[in-house]
Length: 245
Ligand code: 3Y8
Ligand code: NAP
Image (cartoon, rainbow, N blue to C red; front, side, top):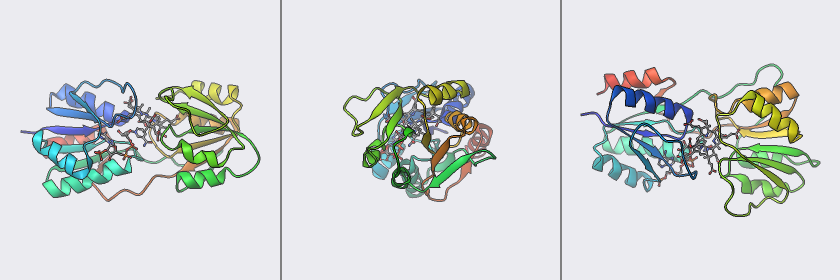
């Protein structure tokens, strides 16, 4: 009897959860517990880490999971690495549901960097108003470039002081719109954007807005992931589930 574990936290994961709920397949949706009130899903939902690879393997056994769909974000490298290790050890079938990286088009002024630390070094230079659209987890590194005024886009109101000196926090969750991002860049007088190459639609509007306003973007490229079976559409995942159930 098929039973699916969806590792979520992305637009793609939510779209898949809808399709699986409509098909009436037994499934559990999983969040890491990064934000205070994650989007409700039409499936039984668990929140929090599993406790590394061994914790994940124990969960798969106790819930009789037959298929894992890793629909986490391209930067959720630890979770995706744990999925590959757990599936190999316990024989549960696994697939990643991910989206292609963004590519620059004519008019884009991107500086590609390999990591958050390289993004910090790229900000050396005279004071600017910089939009940090990378969420909350990696902000501390930017305290090394104290000369800038940072505009931060966060999902939740910070519950403790941030380690940056000079910042404005904008509390908002995606998916974002072009008009919303144009307004943000203009009202906050943004001169430069730092973001992750997440791909997908939910975070892409700031790139279109930056192109229109002629703003440079420091683009943090994706971390390396272990090789794995990948799908890019809900239909591909649903047929993989059908073919393998
Ligand atoms: C907790 C669960 C859906 C999913 C929606 C997508 C789109 C909107 C755009 C900017 C970029 C950023 C951030 C972002 C986007 C979607 C997607 C996406 C980027 C939620 C969610 C969870 C998270 C975790 C959160 C991180 C942060 C990253 C904000 C839900 C809303 C910057 C990534 O405060 C924190 O600790 C936030 C942490 C990981 C990255 C970071 O390093 O801080 N996402 N985001 C998931 C969990 O607990 O398991 O409530 O929906 C989901 C979404 N955020 O169903 O429609 O698919 O990517 N999320 C990035 O891409 O750069 C914002 O501001 O322009
Ligand atoms: P990560 O660094 O790869 O994972 C760190 C640990 O968090 C994992 O080892 C695991 O803990 C736990 N975890 C991650 N995703 C989980 C999930 N869906 N369900 C249960 N536990 C999970 O992950 P992250 O970058 O912190 O991302 C956390 C969540 O936010 C994911 O759901 C991801 O899809 C979502 N998200 C992340 C980003 C981003 O920029 N990183 C953007 C949008 C959404 P254990 O080892 O204890 O099992």
